Length: 286
Image 1: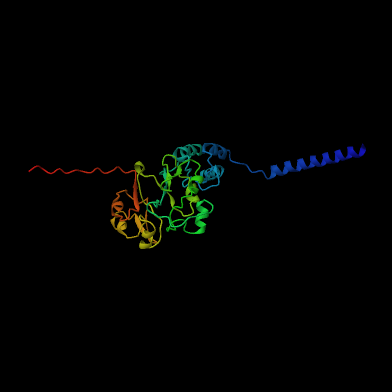
Image 2 (image 1 turned 180 degrees about the vertical axis):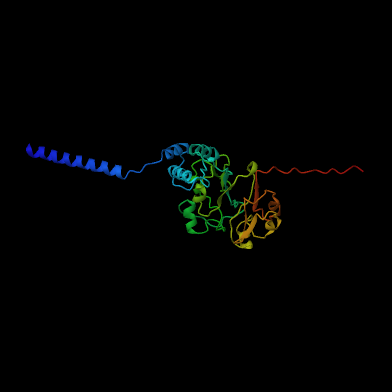
């Protein structure tokens, strides 16, 4: 009995000493967290999508509070919550937040089954990442969409679906939060975040093929051939040609659509523009 009692006393003493040491250490090395971090995190949507550039909403909240301590939260934006949530966060922190134009994901490939003929059959793991690792995929274009839907799987907001007929992804403007998950998921970088534009109108080059004109056109009927007609037609210096590919800077584009009319292959598209009405001219009776 004495042996057991002694053991209990010894173990109890060790536990008591350890508890006291841990308590003193926790007090000495305690890190005081700004209570505003928790308040800001509660205001954020909690999607933890990483679209803000941080690992999750907690990281974003911490960055916002630190930004407020420095006197500015410019450059920090929650794409899911948008301007409304950022306004609430700004009120909590007593800061002003700059107005940021909403963005949306666009698919820069129009290589449908009709435009881009299938020349091979892939029989491996049905993911874009796996197919891209094996080579060009099932078509002659080594730049275009692979059609396996990695972007669809990456989207947490059900904003992308694969069109079964074209085998291309389609983005729902109303559901897209511009979190950028689909951009990161695409191994061929055909998805880009662009400004939604006034009345959701956008103009962009729907091609990322960097082959020379003849080779690009052979692989896909609607490929950009870098002919330069769009660049010459643009009065706002919004179009540049690099690596055999035209690109429209959405910060400079004024949506005049002249480039769309000039493109000989139809590689430049305009979205949500009204359809021009055809004017019928009736001949006067003689």
